[in-house]
Length: 489
Image (cartoon, rainbow, N blue to C red; front, side):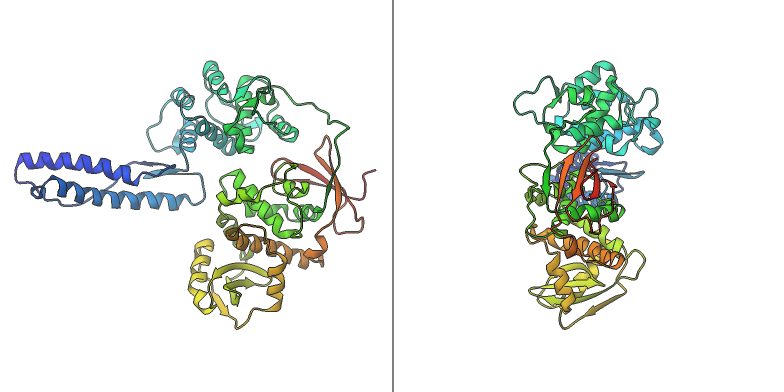
């Protein structure tokens, strides 16, 4: 409240400064938030002096802003972007630019002022290179996947208005190089073929689309120089007859993938980033297989959606990833058609949560009784509904201890082990019920893997096992494996 015009003017100036500081304090470090409006209601006494007034205003505005931003982030869930009439949240600057471009093709889904596509393409050519690559990768993930969806004037696969020829070349020069200079990595033949299978045309718009698809399928490429011919020239149609055969001891993982491919896709569906999906599958593969399995086993890489590497897959990459989306998706699979009923028992210095052969969760607690509230809260958050029954047992059943030991994955980072145990125990339980066999019977099974024109051919050592004959398995990352009993005739 102001008694004079001068005090009212001072209050107005204080409000502007308080707004600026409040926005700076609340603004997310990496994500982008767009707000249409924020309703504020407060009474301030300008007679108390500018410093006190500005501090009170800043605190009030900051608290309200923080609440609005937190609400948008929660509504986004695990998605990379969330757009509503009252505001929007984007995981990064790149995702924000991508969604703005998509709005040019579907303005009805964008409730904010839209900028022309040529302006957005020009801006994409000037922002940080990795963020521009992230924008293209997001478009490739969210856009069409076949030429049938392409329309004149749009970038194939991406579903957004095409930039001018000059702007397109300017964008591509940021990543594509001639020859193979020092530090320019090889793109696998399988990934090259995947890019060209998705879009076999050779015009400039298709080059931009394949580059975007490369960024989506192989995230490290966003910060690396890429040999121009990868996206400009079709790969050879033949595979060298001198390709070496690689020994594997993990063919059981592909047997699992052949039976439960749809389930595996559902377990990773909540991850926005492909690298996070592959990370969860890597952790699951380690938990499903024998703990002594080498991390450079080629089938472990294929199971995770990666190309086999001589050095193997470093488990350290899981440190930067979150196991929770995959853990929550696994529990939705467990309780899809059943009441949420679990038991809790102490095992060592933790409380184990389990149900019908599935290791649901683990809570750090010396007492199973003390863990009940935490277990109920976690299940409610992950499943969207409260558990109907939680039973506390005096001792952990032997069958649960055996399952825990079987799928523990001791080489995994500690925070990943409960999620990996949960997913691995779910698949192991289903395998036992449906096949009358055990997870141990699948472990350590050998075979020989070789690359062919169709993908990978895997001949199993044991022709009498549970693997299906001549089964084609399409794995995440575009790899196709022909799983066979015995050598191919």
